[in-house]
Length: 295
Image 1: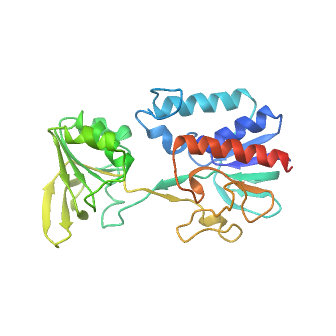
Image 2: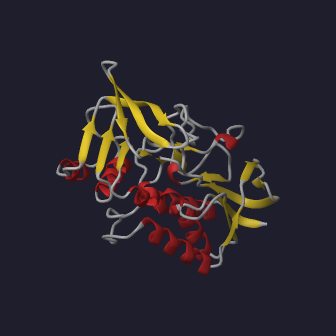
Image 3: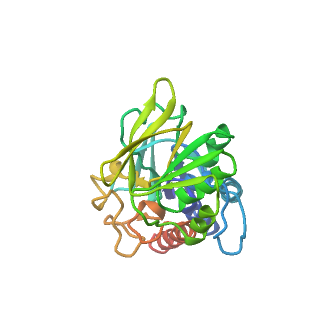
């Protein structure tokens, strides 16, 4: 029997484990892939209070090690479902908790066009900091209009010969500072009010077709395409028990409780205004302290 079972080991889940262990609670962290969540792919974090610059990998590793040193149990297992009795069923077995914190985060949204899945690792990537060096002195494109897309384009502009930034609108959701830096880059070209509609290539990506709002189509020869069009929550396996909104995010009136007593939520997986590292760790702290108080 665990006091708290945490599903997901991103910043929210790891922070929840940190607070729970400091309260001397028996904690199990369950993660399908690796600790750190999406932040582990961030080349540079510059907006975390008190930490001017740190890589996402370093930050996540520091937090993971801190939690492990406190004695939290960590298992790489895929969760299949949870029950209202606070039982978590995985591919490897089942675990009983007094409470559960859902911190499953979100995953990269796909363009959902032909050959996208086929070309992953063969010209299509969702992580510029992971795969950018494969495209040194080559031509690449970034799709998206948020902070991730702008940061990816900036990062790639220092590696690739040419970077196309393709966005379906003519305004960006990302920070103005990043946008202004991009506009100063001589090897970055903006393609606005446009969508990528086709991937070209046989065994690997060699180009894309882009359609603008006037239905004009242009073909662009590129070596790599980096997709940064947002994220999707991973909550469908809970949908028979936990209330989700129409986009699949967990509904929580106060940002911590779900509709099931003893099951809490933290991080990007819930309905919220701002999905940032600071809000993720805040959620983790609040969910753990609330679970402990109500145990």
